[in-house]
Image (cartoon, rainbow, N blue to C red; front, side, top):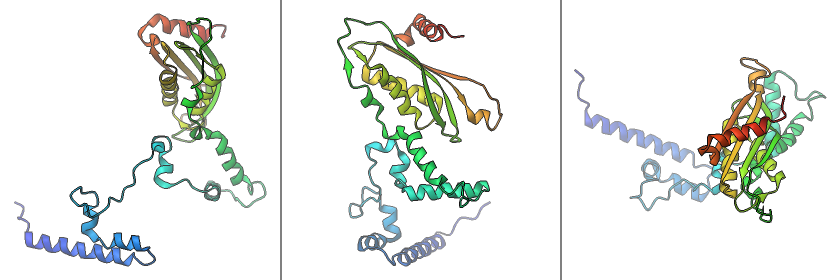
Length: 269
């Protein structure tokens, strides 16, 4: 049988640990601002009670998340690195790969990579919903399907940061009007130019169209080749991945799905 713990001994150990924590907090106060010293002086009890609603004398040390938290969580949590920090990170990767970032061919590579990333991942700075806000209502009563197919895109796998690319096909049944055709392609780019999975990207495009245009139905199909499968791992080139999302009448009526797929595949070898 286990011996019953000595409560007196346990209390002494907890008190000793608390004293040690307080001493550590005081040792870290060198160079702190007055506000930081005030917070550190709260000690172990203050740290335990910082999120306790019964301790109004201690302000919670957690900032509220802004609206952009869902779009760029790392920027919110850590702060966006400077361009110099980003270039230093590229130099670190070059050294890790086994090359010399100071040699002639690589000396400007960090700056080029950071500049390229601004374009490749420009989707983080694009609000896809705004792209669809302008609707043209004068369409002479047109209410049949609008299909834009073979929209090329380039994205990056969020698991390995390796490209995947392919074609997107979008169809919708307008209700209040139609949107500029180029805007559908821009919506694809807005989500493609982020670290992505193909499945998530397909759903995001459909969600945005459904939310802003409120069509009777929309369908999204993406077919792509993933270099993370071709260049590494199983190393199988030429493999195509297809994902779809059906909303509204496309979800409820199988014949509409057949029509969509027929239109997408029409005149294709």
